[in-house]
Length: 474
Image (cartoon, rainbow, N blue to C red):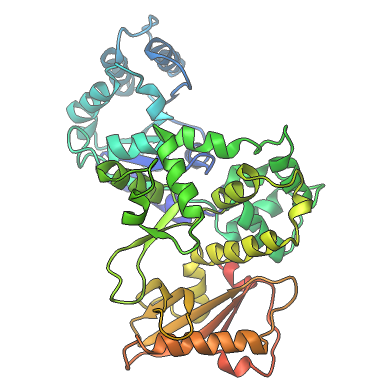
């Protein structure tokens, strides 16, 4: 099978094979993003050892599954291990055997433990045994690559990435697998014979957020609207209950994570930590800090600052399209069909907001279109004070070369053309922003138009125009 995109991740895996040290690689990310697929396909399904955790199995069931894999790869001991220490001891002996499979690039032994969090059942000795396996033996094997992954991101972050005990500083590489970019979505559709215009690909991203599994579910015989209706609104649809299942699979005590997301979904521009902590079902303290960090790690929210220096507290904003879509149209359903939503006021409002999220997830492509890929930048949002006409800017790109891009993001049915009303709004935002910008910085008005742009007599107010096609660059 073909691996679409994933250039950085494939390079990381290649570096593991080329390195002269033992590698402990953690691959993590949201459910359905393609973690297992990436590892299996990159290594052509050839491992020195492969095992996967089993959903909803207790310790004995996990050990039986692990033992079945040991036997498949040549272990001569047939009985189920008494505990995880014995299981990893058998794995060590298997890997020390001269007949063990080695990958052809650099003769490494590659071990892949999939769905690792499921192996760690209640009151088992799994973490201690894995800790002992790595620290007592594997960490001294220069030709060993241990790859672990799992969708239970909370477990991965807590036990492997931020753990201060056995695994502290043991992980040599972390691969955070993100959803596809627009370019990668387009390539996947081409592979699956799904025919769409680029405008429709952008709209699909507004719903499915570039999650490969979701995109693979689209039926090439149906239109995008028909696919959304079949997958999300029909009782038998493959994604009808995905929103409810998603967070249960990722997090322990998922209700708090869902409460945070549903609160932030009401706040288009995001909310501060102190505002979030005042919500009764969320609360504050170290638990909220942990919840927010893990939601960031999964790519559901972003943490950002206002451009104004007077705003010292960061804001958190939902940037996962599928989450926003699900809360707006599935959880809080008003109609039984997607077609009933299309072109309604709520639909148009959602589409405008969703296109802004698309742009926030494609900052690198926007910078490339502006010719500033090599320039250090910071991205902000901004809202003016209460004096005079209020002004709000959802994306400001502040550049080290003395320019600030004031970005206006528009997704319309036809080519966007700046009219008198929008021209007046832009001039107001420009004037308000100039009051807080340092004098040595020039402000460039930048239009990002998802469905094309048409010149008008007001176009002189715009310095840069970025089209939907520009968001598809690699």
